[in-house]
Image (tube, rainbow, N blue to C red; front, side):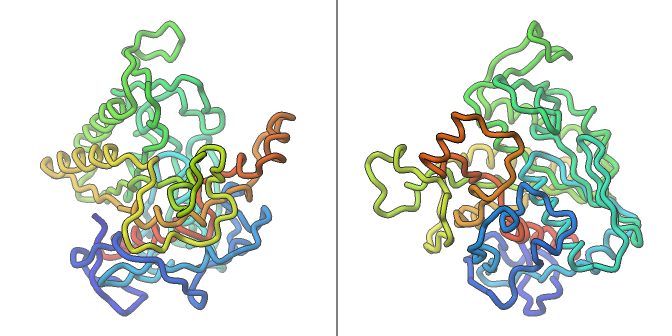
Length: 377
């Protein structure tokens, strides 16, 4: 649970514990939002630069998350950098964690235009440095946390997913020394079958057993938690795990008059311009609560061993934002085939990205929640 106390001073936050920041509603606030302009962020990613790639309806940028009974602190980049002086904040996980990392980079960059900053890409590790503070905000590509055949940061699409569920050291040595760690992992486990390798090789002849995605995820989480218990400096390192980022790939979930031919009429998030504003909690069918329970169980197990991991519950608030994905307004990283082009002409929604998030947008709220905990610690 992500909590903060009630405070009408939007520049600060008191000790966490009095209010659930993940429970609230979206309020249109064109006066105060967005927190930055897409074009003003010098380190914006083409994966999330929706305005650059043709999106003209920008209402998605102007919604403020209002928790019930408290206020999110307004992001103060200088206050955060004071906390991160001579320190390293690292996001570890998949492209949705990278989405959150880009948001954090842009929140800092646009608010501190006179500071000297640089970006270094070293394969799986990308480092954003703020030199006056000797601070680093990094992203490390590790979509399944443990070793897998999807560890290449560029060429990671494989027909058969395979993991070494007991092996994390190769990745962990790249992030263990960070002062603040933000993990995530979910979508890459959403397969009916995953190969769990017994040995050290990803070759076709390697010995393995096949299990479902949830069971493989549980095995990987145990390896992850064991590493944290035995290798991290508990007095120094703050640990977070970002909950499931929902997708909006089934428009019949929110359309009142969806037809009986759900599959053929499904436009995913294409042309969606408004959030789901219903008061009741919305949950899409691609969000499997069993994975959240697995994380909570492992976090509880770590707590019993003296290791504190805070779960950033971003799922509920993000479920309502069907309007905030790139959809078709994104860079095409590989040229489309003739078949794909024909499919796009027949149905533009077939190429919609309803997984990642436009920036500025929803991940900025995730980082406001993260910021609240870092500055309150």
